[in-house]
Length: 312
Image (cartoon, rainbow, N blue to C red; front, side):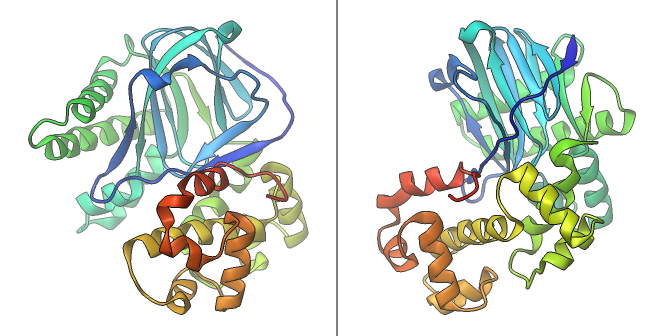
């Protein structure tokens, strides 16, 4: 049973990093047996497709502007950049586990010789958010649980097994998108107004992006775009773009030893001084400090990643 509910418009960006050479990340185990939603008055969104499976508990999942009840043996499929949250009933314990999947990179790799087909499938996978009962979608639920168990056990050749299961999972989700079946929330309002530009920034942050260009992607005037973006994200388009660029710079510095000038250029900053200023504003330290001892600042970076309040 579903309904609609209004809440204060606050949204967090929770940014995850998938380990190198893996198509997904799994959040498994006792850590995810918890009361969900206690004291939380905001929605959040991610940079990857999120799939959650509920093993026990009741409550609701908020999908942008819709509220859908959940119970044991239900699962969620939530595209990247889609605002959502989970609330346990009376803040009681619920047991969930999660997968975060880099849909674009995975399908581009699988269909490297047919990128048009890959992009069509990506669009279908990311087109809708679902909260479904495993009894009504046994094949899809089974694939999710198999992948989670492979990630839990990590037996020999588990990554090869996961890639096969993951392709089947993507095909099943794309079929759902093409048939428009199940309990779904089509992206039609709320933050979805700027979903295209969030995706565009994630793919083109290294380019010289102007507010005018971003407004054009959203098919809005610059004034209207600035207002809608600030209303939905609680930060300006420029602040969001700089945040994405800083996160990309951290990844780049972890994986290479190139100069700061090149890092700044690769991540879309016009100069090293602009890079340094924005990096320190967001992370709290200079790029040089982070590069020397990134392990000392993981907590600081994590706090930065999950914050999308204006002024942070």
